[in-house]
Amino acid sequence: MSVPALADVERLPIARPSRFSRTMMVSAVTVLVTAAIVPVSTHQLPATISFMPALLAVVAAFDILSVLLLAGDFRDRGDVRLLVMSCAYAWSLAVMAGYGLAFPGGVMLDPVLGTSPSVAPYLYVAWHTGFPLLLGAAWLPWPVRWTRATSPQWRRQVSLIAVATAVALGAALVAVVAYFGPDLPVLIVGLDTSRMTTLTAPVAVPLVVVALMLAVRGTREFYGPERWASVAILVCLCDLVLTYTASSRFSLGWYVGRTMTVIAAGVVLMAMLVAFRRIKARAEQDAVEDALTGLLNRRGAMAALEVLGVRARRADQPLGVVSCDLDLFKTVNDRYGHEAGDAVLAAVGRVLRDSVRAGDVAARVGGEEFLLLLPDTDVEGSRTVAEKVREAVSRLEVVGVPGPLTASLGVTVLSQHDADDSAALRRADQALYEAKHAGRDRVVVLLDPEPTASSQDVGLTKSSPQR
Image 1 (cartoon, helix red, strand yellow):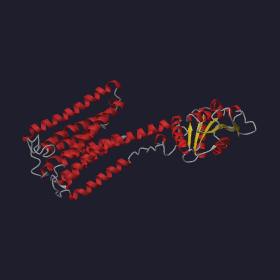
Image 2 (image 1 turned 90 degrees about the vertical axis):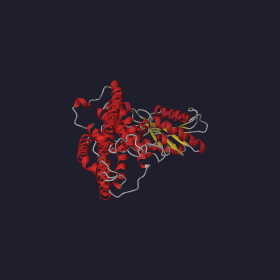
Image 3 (image 1 turned 180 degrees about the vertical axis):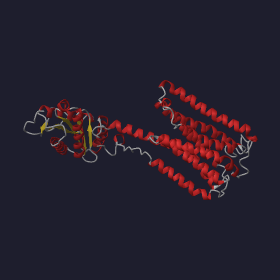
Image 4 (image 1 turned 120 degrees about the vertical axis):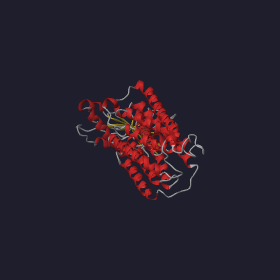
């Protein structure tokens, strides 16, 4: 058991990843919001000059972080599909930059790419169609040889080349649209976007639907952040639907659609950050927890001893220290196998958890060695807990291990005269050694800093069975 107030030894709960629940919930909310906005999407709102620059800045930040994290994940795992996803965000970043330069007020009031009023809408359609298509392409049913992990020595070069190529292709598309803009059919007249809907919706919407189907099919067996790619594509689809039904810039549907652009750019990123937090929490928990028994390991126990020792000295309160060792445990492993030995250790771990209070610490500090730290517990209280543990171990019945189990325990209390907290730990170990030497299956208490000064054997008077 851990000390609740200690952040460095706290056992952090790790949420088990759900296969569909969160993605389905976000998808359902997105569809419902879209369906609710569509009937009133044409409602005109005031033009807000700062809206587009803020939106583009947020999306750019999300895209850059997504590129870095996905490319880094590819370098760690070698999965080409992650690299393709990274390229989707790199391509999106380049095309979005062109869109910002072409949209009035996106970066400047007079667009840098203002050769034609059709440049911005064409880039918008290319952006919101190409990005989901690239995400969907990442989850195509590729041949098995294509999905094999890339060799580690090539991953860095491959990721740099792939991302740079995606940015270059996006920039090339922007240049082509800007160059041929005056010759392209006009999509927006003033604020009216109905012509854009008529000309581009029959192509863009089906393509995004195909990308969505590919992503849903390709990620259905995955539990990591990549399963959120389908949600990003769905949000892009809803963005297009609202834009097409709004029929005008700066309408309610237009504003909500642009807001969904932010969600589409950030949903996979947020999933990755949550996953990384869980990995960090798991690593921190594994660093201080024994996987077999669920108790703290030696590192966690030493951290707890350091903190509890300081508290005990400041408050002038006792801190009981109990060292416990299973008797002749090697014989259990040799006779009945390591699986039976693990079952015994797990059972003893349950005994220790049941024998201490909230706020006490129970730890497995070695193979069959355990440690109890008992704040605000004097020697009598510590001895009572130790005897309780000894008796509970003797009553254990473990499948595959016939005969009684026994444990020897050494008890002491942290003294104000101890040079450090480790002195109490060494004294408890010395008491444990005396319990072993006296015949096992007993509790021995040592009170003075010098182990030879005073010892009290409170174990069984009869000899213990030698196993």
